[in-house]
Length: 488
Image 1 (cartoon, helix red, strand yellow):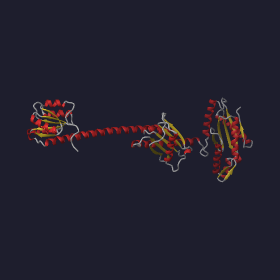
Image 2: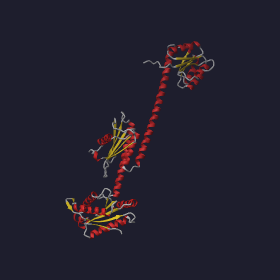
Image 3: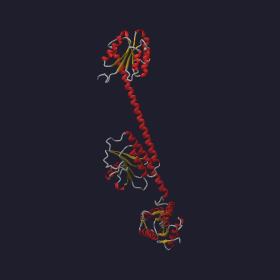
Image 4: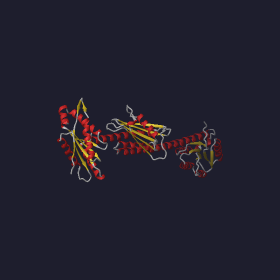
């Protein structure tokens, strides 16, 4: 490969002796350089003031008007990268050394010019300059790359901080999944994202959230859902019919048909359990780069922790409001629901009913515990709770009020409807054999009903007392029946 530069490099020759000046000029022109000459220091300084500076200058130390050392200093001020070669006589050897200390590259003795050596010295000097310029360019490129890397790192840190703030406040698992979808689409510039979550220990269906920058077609939704299910890290596949699916997307004019060229998946796990999977879809040929994958892993980690906290919070709420034995609402939460429902009834002008049911003595909890033991009694209570739960409306609430007494809250229910519901529950319990631990029990209950009407002035405690009175009237009449008590 030729060392000849692609563009002519400029060389300045400064010497008051015309024959030497002409000789050096011809040598440089023959080597392919663009040559400028000056016979005085003043001419040289004028040439150094031009916008396009020479790459190399050959300067005589002894000039008639300005010292060559001064030209050296001025040239270095104008361009520190300019290469200076000193022309000196034998008597000026000490000055030549000083010039080298000031930054000159080399010196040539005028009284012993070597025609063959001069081009070599010039070539080496310019090679050195080119290497220096190239190094400066590499350093500048490295600095730019460093600055870009720092910018990217700062951007990643900002995204991660955003993730932390966005996920920290979520108490509902679906809300957290929505935040994860939005962050994935914005931070990783993907076209679609999906999250499939299987709650670990609370009675809730697996749910999937699907999101995209454009509305997802039905086929695209199915493709994304299938990708989530096939990548779910559990040992057994989750049936599609068991997944509660929610879709969110930007309001764009065009639909996303789901023909993604690349898909990336990451599992949602904590040290305690596996919670789900997240999948990203992209229409671009290239997969996510390493930086995007790092952000995805951070999002998966933070999202998993947030989901686990949400499930723990849900579990704590369940424990605070549920009876640990039957899974029904407990006494205190029943009163909270009742007071809230009375307030709603007052606002909207409809009636509500409560039904109190107590197991009759011949088949009651005390008899079963004393005869068969507390484990059997607990199992019977759980089965009674199931019968009640399966035979009320979706809007009704069932609670274990205490011992073997149960309470049912029935919103938007009048007197006739309440009596029909209470009698149906009594009949269902009477006609449903309770089988536990190889034993069979036939349970009967006594029931009391009270109905709240707006503007009656009756509070929650009074309403429960009225229903209790009806229940005790039923027991006094031999049980296995229902009575209603009004306040007027």
